[in-house]
Image (cartoon, rainbow, N blue to C red):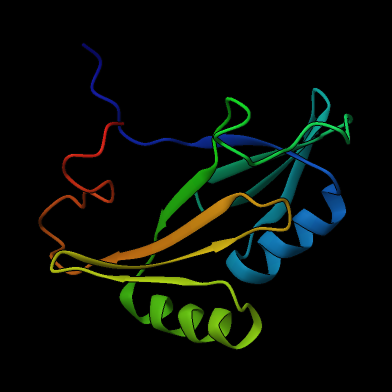
Amino acid sequence: MICLKCMNGVALKVRDIERSMEWYNRHFGFEHKCDAEGCRVLAVGNIELALSPHNNQDVPLAEPWEVCCMHTLALEIPEGKFHKLRREFEEKDADIVNIDREDFQSIITSDPDGYSVELYYNKQPNQPVQTIPKGVSK
């Protein structure tokens, strides 16, 4: 078995690349890195996000029960930045889910195409966070 260090990139199909780029830049600081194979690659730190056009307007993008697709990004951020971003999202976005557990605190919002974006901080830095509740199948 290979021991993975981190997950570097995620690819999302989006209806409007420019709108999505602006959203990920405004909220998380993602910057345009390059264009590659029909997509625009954004990066912040060592995290890459590839946005590609969704050309079939009749097919839903982020409806996990209707189409087989990835529908949630979970991003760990420092506690201080978490509280700042939580206030920012609460002021600007009406549809926010707050989760406060013993081991982590998170908020879940949606990007312009309906993908869930979970931001969390680890309350116990020496322990890994399990954001999927026990008993829920993966």
